[in-house]
Image (cartoon, rainbow, N blue to C red; front, side, top):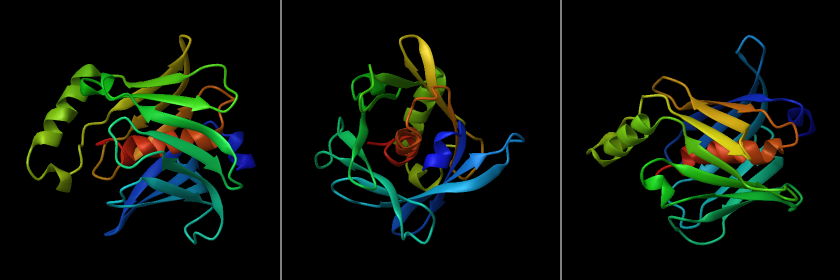
Length: 198
C-alpha cells in the first residue's frame, strides 16, 4: 500500500454478489477517471461480528488490511483496523446518538494527536435517507440521492467522502491530510456504505 499512500483521491465502487458485499478501490486520475486498482474488499453478509478484509486484487491471495468489530452486533460498535502483519492502524466508530439525525463517525489513527469526526454534510438529505430506510422494499432499491461526509479535526478538513449519483454505490474519497494512513481512510470510506444501516 506504499504507492497508494502518495495518492489523495480514490474511487470506491460496490460490487454486489448474493452472499457478500465487495468493493473495488481505484486511484482517480487527474481527469476523474478510475486508474490503478489498489484494494479489493470482501464483506460477508449476515455476520454476527462484522469483519471486512481488503486484498491487493480480486484474486484475494494477498491481504492488505482488515477491519473488525470489537463486539457482536452493537449500534455503537468500535471497529479496529489492522495491517496485513496484524499491526493496529487505528479504529472508527459510529456515534449512535448523534447519528439519529445525521450520521456521525469518529476516526482515530495510531499515534494521532486527536480524533477526526465525520458527519453528513446535508441535514435534509440525512433526514430523507432515514425516511427512505423505513419504507417497505427499499432494501432492494439503493438510496439514489448523493450524500457527502466531511471528516474534520480541530476545524480543518482531513478527508471527504462523496457518494456519486447512480444506481450502483460509488464514492469518491478525497484525502486532504497527507499524514492520514490511506488504509485507515479507505476502511472508513467502505464502512460508510457497508455499515451505514447499523
